[in-house]
Image 1 (cartoon, helix red, strand yellow):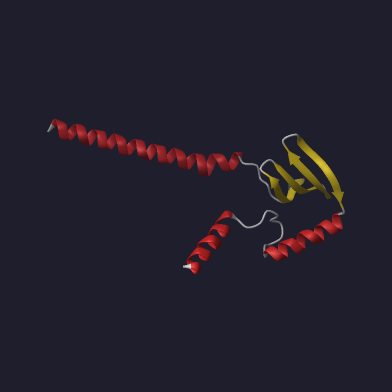
Image 2 (cartoon, rainbow, N blue to C red; image 1 turned 90 degrees about the vertical axis):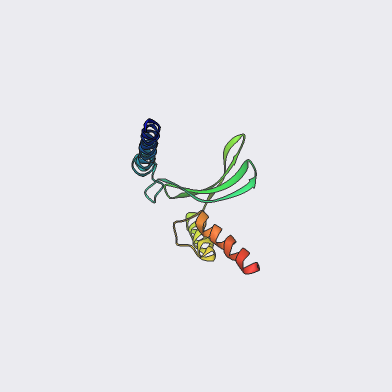
Length: 128
């Protein structure tokens, strides 16, 4: 009888600990982290319009800062301004790229991970 009560008490403690951990995880991910996260919305002064990786540690960025468009290079040695772009031409080019990608305007990086994953899965299922 004592063994079964001891086992039952350990089971209750384990379930309580599991509920406590799940509650803390929920609190952290749903309440605390969203309040700490920086909002990268349209109200920011700096927007990364596009990025292309040249190498593992080198990239080119097209950024818009307070209405100015710039082509910037990033590498181990730092960040360098390559050129300032014409805002009207850059905006037209961005709209054309987004139209070709079939994305809504304002999303300069491309499709979400979920969209790309669905494409890969559908390609693999179509190939079988």
